[in-house]
Image (cartoon, rainbow, N blue to C red; front, top):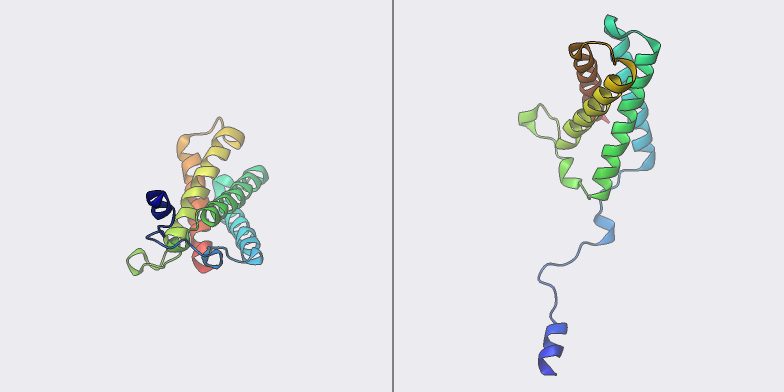
Length: 143
C-alpha cells in the first residue's frame, strides 16, 4: 500500500509543456506566405523560357503552395519553434526556410514528372523544380 502511494505521487522530473508555448504563426501570415510562394513560383517559371507554358506555371505554383502549407502544418503539429532560428552561416536562412524550399522542390518535381512533363527530359524537370524550390525558400526567408 505504501509503495503504490509513493509511486503514484512521484512528480515528473521534466515539467510538461504549457499550451501557450506552441509554435503557431497567425493564420493570415500563413495565407500570405502561401500566396507569395505561389506568385514567386509562377514568376520564376515564367522567367525561364523553356517553362512558359500556362499549364506548367499553374502546376508549379500549385505544387509550391501545397508544399508550403504541408510544411507549415508539419511544423505546427510538431511544435517546430526551434526551426525558425536564422543562422548567419546559412546566409540568414533558418531550417524552416530551407525546409520550405526542399518541400517545394519535391512537390514540384513530382508534379512536373507525373503531370506536365512526362515526356520531357529529367534535366528540364529538375531545373524547373529547383527554380520553384529556390523561389519558395527566398520568399519564406522574408515572410
